[in-house]
Amino acid sequence: MIIEKKYYFYAAHRNKNAGIKCGRIHGHTYNVVCHFKFNEIKDGVTMLFSEIDKVVEPIVKQYDHHFLLYKEDSLCDVLNMANEPFIELPFETSAENMAIWIFNQIKTYLPIVKIELAETKSSNVIYEIGS
Image 1 (cartoon, one colour):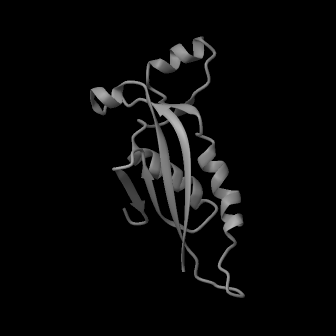
Image 2: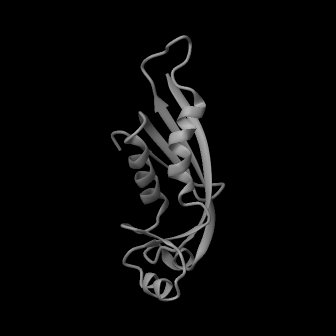
């Protein structure tokens, strides 16, 4: 049985390696769709949606209304000096990297098999086991 759950968060970022447009500070509404595979159904239920939310929402929402930056970005030093909060990540903040990062956090707790992450209404990335 596959369960699909949808989440979202708002965040700013920049990716200096992704061209002029993406290299500037900008924001997105990140839409995240998680697919979980459950092998057991007990009394007609695999896992309560609310129990999935208890695990996934804190993982996804930790990025909500934050500035996401690669730890090697020179802007990190400026923001630290200004005592301005941001989230430092060990990778460039591409949709692909964010999808893999969030997927790996969730898989520690739940049987996630696929994640879809969209930064825009017209484009999304899909990462799944075996990718």
